[in-house]
Length: 253
Ligand code: ADP
Ligand code: MG
Image (cartoon, rainbow, N blue to C red; front, side, top):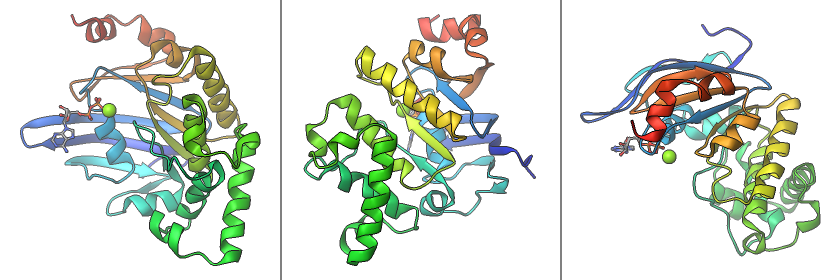
């Protein structure tokens, strides 16, 4: 069994698609209140890894433990209900719905129900509860002044923060973020980094996939570097940055 203090423990994780090895023998762990950044060139296997961690896809081999229990046989919905929340590489908000409504969808997912039942099958009291929880989370992330704006009218940086608020509504202990800083302005990146630092201080574990080296180096506790499905380096940001294998993978050696 996994050590009790690990939120996430991965052992020998492998995912093959036919002859292609998208993840090869990956092992790592993440503790509460820790930010792990996963970096690597396009096609390195980062999104595939997230799909295994969130049980959207099933590994070919290896084991994943979430909060000390194997995730074998669990669905993505089970994982959400158990405290794993994720955002996606491309923002998926409902642009004409309000900020508050977009966040409230996340509050319903923790109950183990899908998005559609969340929209279609709520009585008024349930709905009021979800909206209240959503408002609390929006205030927590600094979007309290925008509750009734259309989600699509927010700046890109605010939309990313809204996605995180939606994830927080499910009361997660582990957040998986796929390229949260992509396309953001410097000021928006700083704002996002501050928010993630605050969540870390509150004990949430974060695994983020990111291309932006500067963003990662200033924020992550540990960095794992992937190339062609393999882990080629792992360590403190400054160690990884100085690793010749990493420079080679990034500079196309
Ligand atoms: P990254 O997110 O690091 O850019 P991905 O995890 O998306 O990389 O992809 C890793 C490799 O696995 C790529 O070569 C990609 O084409 C392949 N791959 C990903 N998903 C599938 C799939 N469902 N079927 C076949 N090949 C896939
Ligand atoms: Mg990807």
